[in-house]
Image 1 (cartoon, rainbow, N blue to C red):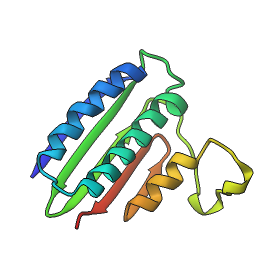
Image 2: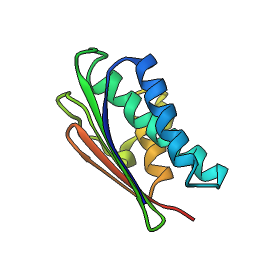
Image 3: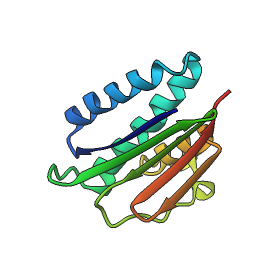
Length: 128
């Protein structure tokens, strides 16, 4: 079992080292490199989206990250201090060439479950 709870400011350099440490810890538990690539992409998208879109890159605003890895299930909970969003992945149209929303669509395709509650996103991914 792996459990993590922490926070980071909305600064991309800080987020990079914050996530690198977490990915390294998780990588010691998961050997499959394809799975690790997906987890890295999921966490990057969620935390960076929180900094840019949720917290508007205001460095005094925090992003909370909680992770649970247990019984071949990876769960992550990301919460920012923004006002939140309402987003429907099914209504996203890639042909519109919009940047906003693309990361959430990617995350939804890489996970088994994704729920958005205003400024909090939770995901679950069954590991193989």
